[in-house]
Length: 432
Image (cartoon, rainbow, N blue to C red; front, side, top):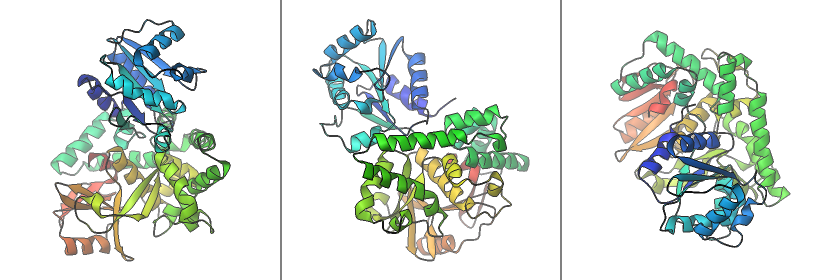
C-alpha cells in the first residue's frame, strides 16, 4: 500500500538529517510496514530490532549510552557486521526502553552519521511521562496517522479517480456527475471501513463490498487498544477511567452539542479525576482533541480556549464499529442520527492527517462553525454537512459578521462556488 508518509522518510534520508527519526502513532496504522518498506528500498543494509520481540534487548543500554559500544553489543547479539555508512537501524517499540530513547541524543551528537529510526505504538504516552532526560532537539519527531481517503483510493486501485478529484479541486470545476456519484459511494464505504490498513485489505478481499467486511478486524484493534491501556498505565483505576472516556466518545459525538462533557463519561465524573486519563488518550493518538476558538483571529493558537473542546476517535471505521451503525444508515438518502457524527469525525481525521490543528468556533448556543483553519493570515471557516442539504444560519451569520475572504462548505454536493462559499464534496477533504 502506498503511503504519503513515505515522502517524509525519504526527505530525512535525502537531506541527510543527523537527528534520529522518531515515529509516533497509534497501533495498527501501518508504521512498521512503511518503515520496513522504506529501509529495504533505500539502504544497502537494514537491521530491524524490536524491543517486544527480542528478550532483554533493553539490557544492551543498561551500562552505556555510547553509540559505538551500543553498536558493538548489537553486532554480537545479531552476528551482523554493522557498516554505519550503509546500514539503517530500526528500533521498534522503543517506548519499552527509556535508556534507548535517551541514547538517541548521543547518536545524534556522535561524529559518525548513524542512521537510526525508532517507533512505538504508545511512544507519545511514554514521552508525555518521560522520567529521564528526553533528548530535546536531538530527535526528529514525525506523527503518522491512519490512511486518509486519498490513500484509500490508491489502495483499491482508484488512482485515476483521486487524480480527477484533485484536478477538479485545483481548477474549481465540477466533477462529471457519474464520477461524482462514484466518489461519493467510495466515501460512504470509507466511513464504514475507515483508514486502518488491515480493514482496507479486508474490504479489497471482499471485492469492495462494504456489507461483507469483517468487523472482527476493527474489534481486534479496539481490543488491542484496551490491552495497551492496561499495560501502559500507572494503575488499574487509571485504566478504568481511560476506558470509560474511550467508550463515551460515540455518545459525546451523538449529542446535538458535541462539546466534550465529563458527566457523559459517567454522572459522577469530573475534570479533576478524568483530565489525566483524557491526556493519556490524546498522547497515545487514539483520540484527537479539537479546541474551541475564542475569537476568529490569527494566529489561531493564541486565541484557543483550552477549557472547551471536542474529542474524536482516530479512525472513523473504529467509530462505526463501536456504534454498530448499519451500513444502510450512512447512505445519502438516510437521515440517521449518527451519520452527522461519523461525517464530522471523518473530516477531523482528514484534517489531522494533514497536520492541521483541529479548532472550532462557537460564540453562542445558536451559532457554531465546525472547523476553522488559517491560510495566509486569514481565518477560513469550514462547515460540514452530511448530505446535500446545505442551509446554515451559522455560516451566513459568520460571513456577515467577520467577512472572511471566502468560506468552505463540505457536503455531498459537487464542487462549486456561490456567495463566496466554496463547495467541496465530502470525498475531496484531502485536497484542503
